[in-house]
Image (cartoon, rainbow, N blue to C red; front, top):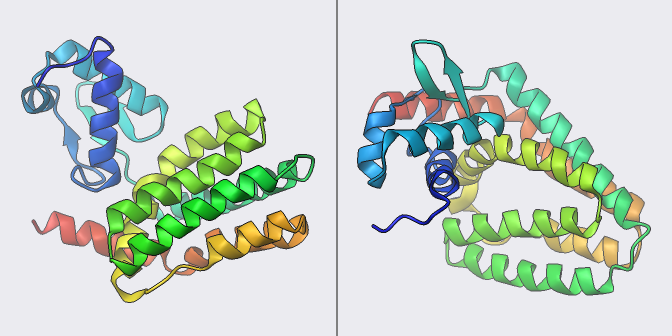
Amino acid sequence: MSLPETIPYFLADRIKAGIIRWRYPPGSSMRETDLAAEYGASRGPVREALRILELQGLVVHAPRRGFKVKHYTADDLRHLYRLRAELEGEVVDALATKQVDALCDRLDRINGVMRDFAARRDLEGYFSHNIEFHQLMIDSTESSVLRTILHQVNAMSLPVRFILLLDEFSGRAEYRYHRDITQAIRSRNFQIARKMTVEHITRNLGRVVDVYAAALDKYRER
């Protein structure tokens, strides 16, 4: 594999994808030599990539012990979901000062693609477009503060969001809440859109701890 010039960022993206999808489960050691061999790189760029992921909250570093994938406590998970819900609510509030027709047209297109992926039980396709849906709303606020803060929060939440979706995905034929949120924004009913957005995220508070713990047990048994 030919590595690009911006090797640490390339490696960070590849390793991040593995963390999100639990190829590197929470608590697992991220040995520089193993990762260098896996990606055909030297240890220096791998170490820089891990530092990038440390800043995003996806890995932690301990002196003389190296890097490990971030493991969340039950309180961590609750705080992460409550914080994300409130910040995504702020995103909807920020959209209230914008023209939203073009945004909603794009959200509707993404919704259609997500619906198709859900019908085909294509988790990867659905997950990537789910991320795109929320990121488009964030970017449309044109708020550097919201973009910066949510970049960090979303990076930390993605492994949890993936395992929650994996846990329920096979039993659901269609996901309607993104469509309903889009319709509320298009009608400029931002109060309802905010309420639905917050509820969409916090509805997982009741099961996130159990699903995360069960997934950890499963991956430890491998």
